[in-house]
View 1 (tube, helix red, strand yellow):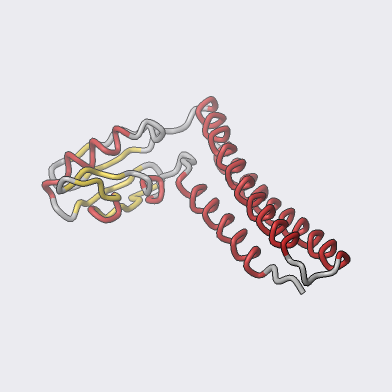
View 2: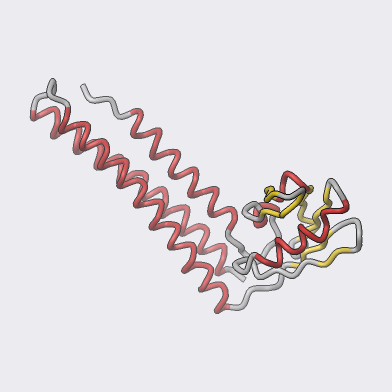
Length: 181
């Protein structure tokens, strides 16, 4: 019999990566994961923000960043400003950095949903790649009969549809959250 546990595990990893990507997408409310993709040049190398500072959401419209080393404040502020996809303008008082989260316009919300839909397509391509690898493995398996191969191929297709639907559900929830004022 053909074992699909490995393929299921790979597809689950794709869905988990997609969920993590969706956490980074801005929804108009402050969330520390918004800055998870930002890397600041500290100590001569680019380091993820969560390794050089503590990021917290003070309220729905404000992120507060407390650097572990106060001398890195300028580098952190510059890194946040440099990330154009965020569109944020941090302000610091020498000890902490405050990042106000501006309200999203309808146009900006639609643009964010459009950018998120590109991530949907990337995730679905990754799932289809897992499906292709499984099909190749099925074709290469010489110890299986044609009936077993056909049945396993149908199971792989069903698995692909199942995980593709999970991505669609995640995206629908995220786009609804983005579009909600």
